[in-house]
Length: 163
Image (cartoon, rainbow, N blue to C red):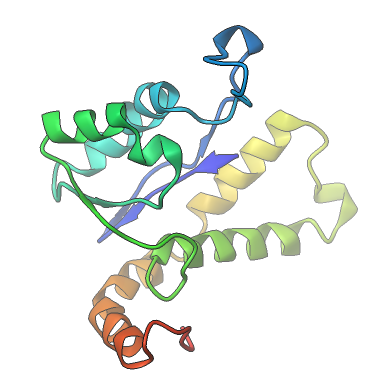
């Protein structure tokens, strides 16, 4: 699992999310995915918070680690405003388009079997290199088109658009 953020004229590093160890299990139902503590300690604080020093607004989907009491408290303490947003909607969530570009770039690269990663470290390095090679100038311009996207979605009654 990877985490990344994009803002107006800025983007984060691509972070490989660490799989928690069974000793970190918080309950019998804990499947060791990204939890609130890990999200705060390993993503919000070191990677997202520095990006928000310019514009303290963030769009996150409804993942439990984004909506937990601990995460809400962190945002409140640091003056970060969370803008409510639907998950996985490329019409309204630009990061979905960025993920699509990243996946497309990696698939093209890995058509050649010699360029495919052979272990976790190679996979992380390849994904991080591809992330940095994305057309960031073009991606940053997508923000300028957001008012038009939102109006189009409203006109279509929330249904999908050509974006």
